Length: 239
Image (cartoon, rainbow, N blue to C red; front, side, top):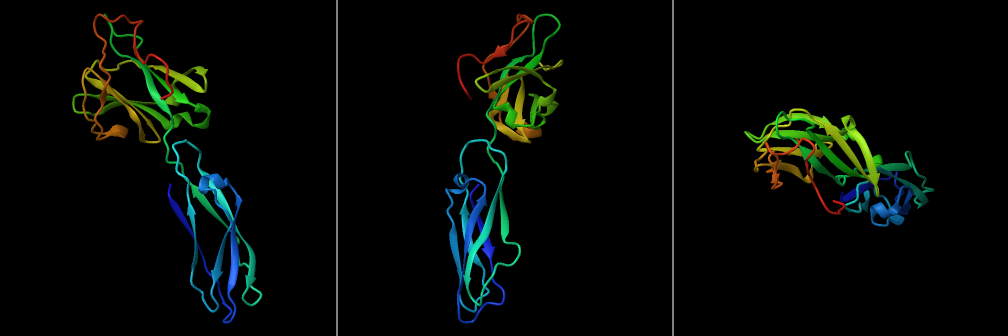
């Protein structure tokens, strides 16, 4: 997000008369480009130099799909009966750089006797806006910070949806007992605050959390934990 420049030039300029044109937004939302309004450009008489229209892209924290804005040259006048050459339309694609609102909501990795019902639960806001395979859970070994397993969310079970927040759960046998960790990423980028660990903190040395130090959740499971129990967030919240 930031600025985008559009360059136009004229060929065979008239030596006596300037040429003017409007650059109008003909497809796309003006609110995504700082409430863009039609801008005029002027080519001095006899000049073939580029003329520039600067597009200011609105930056926000909302996740949106990539968007394409279409601009069109209109109202060409002056010169020697000046007309627009081809193409008269040009596109500006705005690529989203905001990560989804999603988090690790629950984990279970250790219990009395043989470990069972190990798994991870994730919550995603407005999950219908995304491709689930773009979300990934990475399991990390606290000894050396290396990953030892990955699971994309399209392999998770879909749970309930409440106020646009959908729950996803997967049983994952063999989650290590710690100190170890779990990261949640989207399209290869770690979601902020979603490299969590139990029984201590450590830095990841590969995968989507590479170079990031985990956040120790401060609670853990052990030999006295029942297989029906888990570690989970409590209270109300949207992040």
